[in-house]
Image 1 (cartoon, one colour):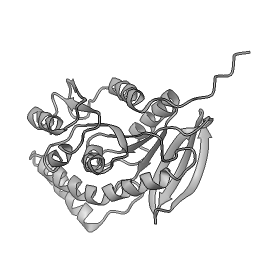
Image 2 (cartoon, rainbow, N blue to C red):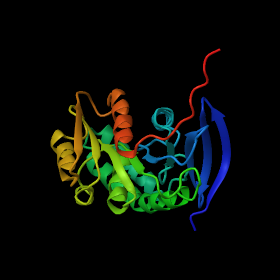
Image 3 (cartoon, rainbow, N blue to C red):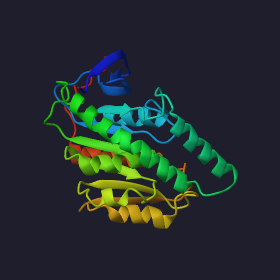
Length: 258
């Protein structure tokens, strides 16, 4: 059905924020307040334990809207944000916390759980793109990007592998298990983030996922630091990456100062 229902709308700082539901799934769409025509779209996917309006999602959206004139949309992932947790969600979260408390590797649990979530989230993202392209300010002819790190990569890699409408994507910080075969089917330009001192994802695993992408253009961005220490300047790089591959929308000229 792919019914998109706007449930709330507000405007601040030149950005229109619209809360919506897609067949009951909560999401948010950020758009330029004053646009002169259809503009590119970037779909984001948030990290594990976060939600559609997490500061990372909202901050990246602001950069894309102000810097490029894009529309940016995010769905709450299954079991996250305003979506209820299932018994399976609770079991996997408990297993993760138990492994963390015991000092055991978290990777096998996270990979398994994220793969489970992606099986639901990927069809939802196809439906989201279908619905958003029906909006006149987005349309069906413009380029579409995808930006997802951590769990966002677990959702994004199988989604982009199966979605020919995606023009370019930013991924990173995930294990290759369950994703490498999907990555081999991706040929669009890729920017990939990896933390050299990640305490959860080994360098070998991070490099293995990057290597799996079949893209002729793919850039590996390696920074020192642990899993949660991805530098903020990588957001600047991602915005430039999307601008190169999606173009920029026509924005109204600023009002001259009095």
